[in-house]
Amino acid sequence: MTVVIEPAMGFGSGHHATTRLCLDALQRGELQGRCVLDVGTGSGVLALAAVRLGAAAVVAIDVDPDALENARGNAALNGAPRNVEFRQADFRHEAGLQADVVVANLTGAMLQSGAARSRARSYPEARSS
Image 1: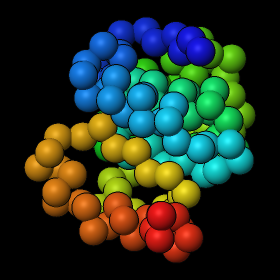
Image 2 (image 1 turned 120 degrees about the vertical axis):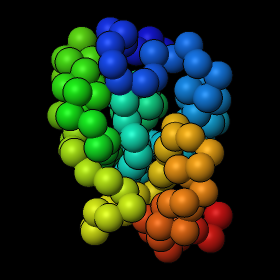
Image 3 (image 1 turned 90 degrees about the horizontal axis):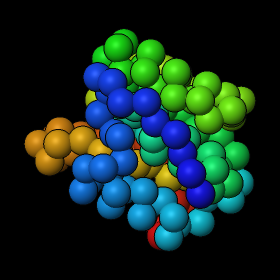
Image 4 (image 1 turned 90 degrees about the vertical axis):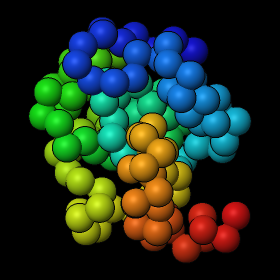
């Protein structure tokens, strides 16, 4: 599987160890037909990989408008999948974000501060697994 990423201000070229670990986790998970939430999408690499791995829908959020511009450009480089929505939002304050799978390539401090909210974003059946 190949995802084309144009390096820019958005984090997530695929070369950083945390990005590779997230990509590995996505590849080992069952995404076929599932809804994925990519928190802090950066370049969009995880959202685009999720689509390539069979996700039915992906919502990719970031607080940085420059990162979202980069992510949308990268989506265009990868065939502009219609089932990816890029949205400016802060997962700590945005209501109505739920998914079967939540991926967040963020700093440890950010993950800790938002862990409870992130778990609440997954559908009840996903929380039990």
